[in-house]
Amino acid sequence: MTILPRTFRIALAAAAAALLLDGCGGGGADANSKARRMSVNSPAALAQASADNYDDNVNGLVTGATLKRWMSNWAKERPAGVTGKLVILQATAGPAGAEYIKPDGVQVFTYLSPSSEWIQTRNNGVIETPSMVPDGAMMDALLKKYNIDPARDMIVAAMGTGSAPNAMAQGRIWYALRYWGVDKEHLALLNGGNQWLVTSSMAAADFQAAASAAPNSGTATVKDLMSDNTQLQATLRDLLAVLPAADSNVANDGVFIWDARSVGQYAAGTLVERGEDTDSDTTGVQACAAAYCEPKNPNNYRWTFQNSGSRQGHPFGALQLQYTYMLDSTKGFAYKPKATLAAYLSGAPDASGIGLIDGTNKVVGAGNGYQEGDTIYTYCETTFRAMITGITAGVILGKPTRFYDGAMVEWNSLSNIADNSGRTILPADSPWRTDLRSYFRPAMSSAEVAPRNVGNAYASQTDVIVNQDKGYKTGESVGTGGSTGLPPNPCGGG
Image (cartoon, rainbow, N blue to C red; front, side, top):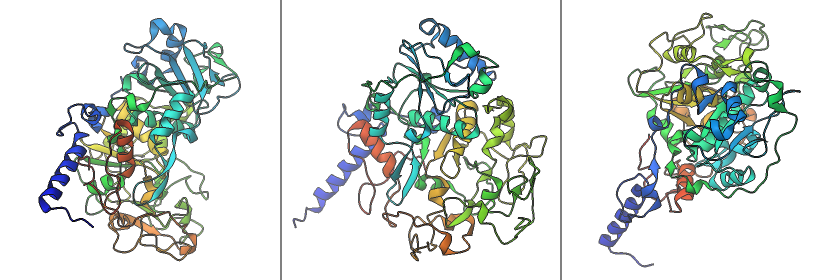
């Protein structure tokens, strides 16, 4: 094996670092590098504030009234800067009589696009995780399938039948497109499900029974979008970097961590919301402050677990408010008014006493939630429920927002706990043990814990997915993790 002189090795390392920094918009010798020309957007730059009246929005969260106006004369009514088609992607069909928003087949098209198309199982360098943002090839296949030109068209993500799961699915469409560089002027979410829209701001004549047939003829690629919006995703390393040393709500640290799951999952069964467990028929009140409050079996907290996880609880410093409070179930699961959502984010409880809670299982109170200037990190089990809290924060309230896409299915897996095969998921000395940075209660038995696909418990970074996606867009090599390689994430964003 040839040993390179030390001075030459130093020069090589410097050149590699310059290439990687090139993707951050600075440094590098190649003035024509695509990475140098790419606009790298911070979470603050990606945030957009809604108008107080959602009818006034022409991107972000739009209403049925706006969509109906667009459909009536797209060439005349389309928003400034949009020169292409109106493409509506419905996560599901609507109910009878309001199945699909009616296309004209010329400038307006409506396609059925389920959430399964907008997620992918991917490996971050340490562990394989389901329901992540799709890779570049998958995104390009979707642009081809629906003949979308994201630089010219207006893309509207719709629920179809209004429901909490369909609001999540709608969010996954928005998230994938925004992450891959679609400008906010070309992207919207339709507020509310078809069953409400057909009787409120739209009419039966605005719907039809069948969706448009996907043409599979598009030629656009995400490689042509010159915005790097990957900071929308928070990696495992990113979340670890911003957690406080203990489970406390630290004000003025620039960070707000929002758990979108149920009270029971956040508190691992030491607190539940009445109606959350099947033994209670009262909803809407956070209750059971005493530990182990399940009425029938106080030692059985496993009902709060999902996906055969090794533990349940939350990262240090996280505040909890369930995603359902962002939506109005009486209006097709539309988002509640902006002022209502802002009050929740501030920490103020509503008339029922529901509000953000901290690790003490108590409502934090007005002024003790989000602090101006904070970056919001939001998650749930698989970042489906967190789509709703993230849309609330980043698209309606205009706050810098990042989605921890690996979510608790990943976070709770990274434990020094044995699975049902008898193997410990992570060794005690792995640098990626999240159990050391969490409040949690473990599974009652290793027999309840499913194995996890850990590829490298000692990886140098967990940013492989983001780096792969940056490389796909620029055609340039970016660090891919493992035990060797370039320093992780030089652009920052911890």
